[in-house]
Length: 462
Ligand SMILES: *Cc1c(COP(=O)(O)O)cnc(C)c1O
Image: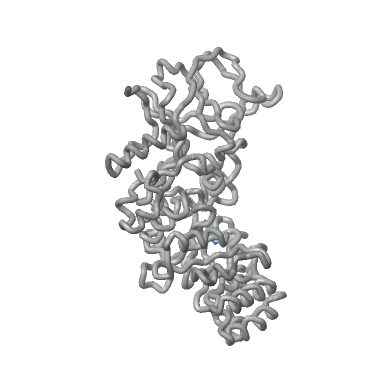
């Protein structure tokens, strides 16, 4: 039986009958879906590679696919990044680097760098055996990597992490002399090869804030000073890398031999430090990046309620007049931030705090409505601000939380709009989305080779 439902998400183009069947199965499996366009991921990577001067430029590009590729799915996203010209992949956790190799993405396809590991339980031997480069940023780390290289009988490929001012990982100017003194003989012995020198930037995403530009300039100066010390010790790095997405786009002078864009691959700009509705980095289209993920859901109960009806826990939202409400069947247990709740009262106080935006299709065209009241564990409520019958909104309609659009102001909410509503950044919006929301892949057949397609869950291909 075909029921008439309205759809506020894009009309998906399936690769064929199987893709359509996969889509329908996913809707039965769960009332929300994350749809990832692999062509967008590939094209974003292509663009980042071009920005860096193309494949012959001497600047390679690493697709940063940490945290399950920012929630987009590790293997499909990694393969799309490679299809777009990435020659490196990067993950924070060793586990994810190993998953890439175990999936069959070999050294012939790309180099892989990983940078999070802790003490003697770290699987450094396994990383070395799987041709994965490891970061070294502590004196203990040097000894662990050297021991693992000795145990495996292979050279460890290392990237020396320096703290140029980020204050997180890496050697400081205080312990760097000891580090190079230890690394030089290990390199001579062939236990380690010093592939890279690297560091991370703190405020590259705020090109319009003079003190932040100055802080980045200082980080670059410090980074170059570390390079000099390595040269003097006879362990000059083959490649240097410092640039995240923001610096890749805005700081051509520090692309060096490798850049490490993450968020840009997924089609977003890094959030400005201010988080204002007018991002300093501009809209995605300014940088010719396309958001790859759409989060859509099918409405639960749609009903009419009286004026003054309290919505959800805490009665933080009261309907202004007679209206209709609709349930969106995902909540904070799916990674929808509770801080994206929408309030109009707090205690007895009036508070005008719109919740996260949702694009709903009506018979009069699309409308952006907002989370009304508190986000619950498995659901939240939308005030439709009108009669569902008149709007033509029904249970089962597909609504869009965010997608490939230009922003809420255009009726096309993005993850940046959700980030703003929740007081966070798009990175956290993506990475919080739980595994129980099916990830489905568009344009997989267009982007990936037959061999690569086999690495995907067949049920995830649209
Ligand atoms: C996450 C990360 C990146 C990518 O940063 P984006 O802002 O997403 O481009 C690069 N380098 C390191 C060390 C990271 O942790």
